[in-house]
Every structure is written in structure tokens, then in C-alpha cells.
Image (cartoon, rainbow, N blue to C red):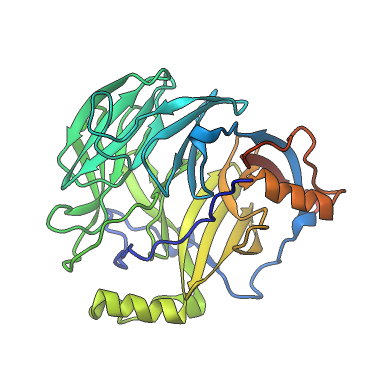
Length: 378
């Protein structure tokens, strides 16, 4: 049975540590502080979760994917980009039936130069971000795969988010002189309306491919790798809402004062932590934190439920079931990505907790999206 390789945390991403450059900094009372210290929060186990639903993504020989997937949802569609390739989007209906590949990277007609990020529009068309050199283009792709250019942006964006009113947020990282501010807000035609987080980092920056924007029913969450601060965009403002203390995995104070390659080699040897994702819906927030030390990768997934915070410690291996959180739906179910083979192993070991009923074994292993609820007695 063919099975994809697990996610590998890229070590080619360098982000400078900075404080929020905003017109009205938040007060300390408005910022949530979290940590990954061993005894700070109660530790969750499999028994603290209930799987309430599963969606299998139909997999064929022409759409095999890894575990390193960027997945976004509309009311009726699921779009998936394999971040190990970033050469096309795979489009599924809401039940997981495969529809087609769209937004393919290439040089011929109907293709795009690069694919870095994507967002659903109001009519379930897909907006895609295609950066090139110090600029970027935004395209609109229909459900049938028809491609049209929306606008070209004079900004080196690597990720973006579509706001409810049709405007956009773009993240450009620390690439001076091309990026004067790490985040910009544009109107629906790509005209810059607001700039956030002034970029004063002057050293050479390598390309990055991280996802920066994540859904919240209060706005849009924004994070940066190697930055312990989490931000929320609301209206026309971007403010810090959370700070993480990574303890022994914090960056050393002189990290950005020495050669980047040398400093990263040292920090990788000693170990470091960084945000991978963050989602918020109603009273529930999920914060995905990756810890890497040498070749060892693990996670602390924090669940903030009201004022209470719980922790799930997860080591990266082929049998890790709750390792890839991908969102929270309107019912406050946490969505996790796994594969049928992984779920089958857990169903055999914990038959009272997990099941593969309705998930037949196929020629190819396939992704399964789990809808998981935290138990009420926590």
C-alpha cells in the first residue's frame, strides 16, 4: 500500500523576532499568556476526545498526497494543497468525493507560475496566490477549473487571507527592500489600504512557505514562525492577542545578531519551538506548537476552552492520530487530518474508542478528516 511521508519541518525559514507595530498596542490584560512548561496545564489523552464524524478524501493514483497538507473549506467544497509539491489544488465536494485538480503550476495556457496559498470566495470559486520575484498575482479559479487573473500586487506576498467584505490580507515576511511591512491589507482590486508590522530587519532572508493566516469567528488570526506572538485582525486593525513562553525552547537573545546559518544550526541542536497553526471558534481555541531538536520533532497542541487550557503532547510518528489539527467548525468540533491506515491501527488497539466502519481499505492509503469533540467532563 502506498503511504506518504510525514510532515518535515523546513529549516529554510528564518523570521525575525519583533514586537507589534500597531497604532494602539494592547494592554497586558488583553493578551493571553501560554506556555509549554511540563506542569502548566492538564495533559489530555485519547480518552478525553470523542470522534463524532469522519470524512474520507477519495484518493486515486493521480491525486496521491502526503501528510503535509494545507486544507481549507467552503460550505460545500474542500480544497487541498500538498505543501511538499505546491503544484496544484485538489478539489473535493463536502463528502470527500474527488472532483478535479485546479490551479496547476506550469508554463502553458491555463496554468500559473507558482502556487503559494489559496482562499475560497463567496461563490465557492477559489482565489489563489502566485508570487514571482518581488510581486504576486491573485487569480480566481472556478469550480470547473476556469482561470482568470484578478490583479497583480506590487508586494512580495507568500500567504494571504480573504476578508468577509472581499478585501485581502497579505504576509510578506522580512524581505527588505521588497517588503517594508510584514502585513498589508488591500481592497478587492489589490490597492493597499493599510500596512502593519513594520519590517526593520536588514539581513538576507531566505524564501518561506509557511501559512500565516487562520480562521477565527472574531476576525483572522495571524502568526509567524519563530515569533511567540499571535495577532488578530479585526476591521482595519491588527493587534496582539497572545504570547507564548517556550521556556528552554525560546530563541537565544543573540540569535539574530550572528550569522543566520550558524545561529540556526546552534538553535536546531539545542531545540526550538514555534507556532504551526491557530484556530478559534466560539469559546474554543486550538494552538498548534511544533518543537524541533535535531531530527526529533514533537508537538504541544493547546486547547483553550473558555478560561481553561489543556495540553496534548504528541510525538511525530506514523501512528500519531491527533497530530495535525486543521480547523474548528461551527459546532466547535476540532478537525484533525489523519490517514485510514493510522486510524485502523488505533481501532484495533482501542476498539471502544475508534472505528474504521465506513472506511474500506483501498489500493491507496487515503486522508481522513476527523471531527473531534473535547469531552464535557474536562
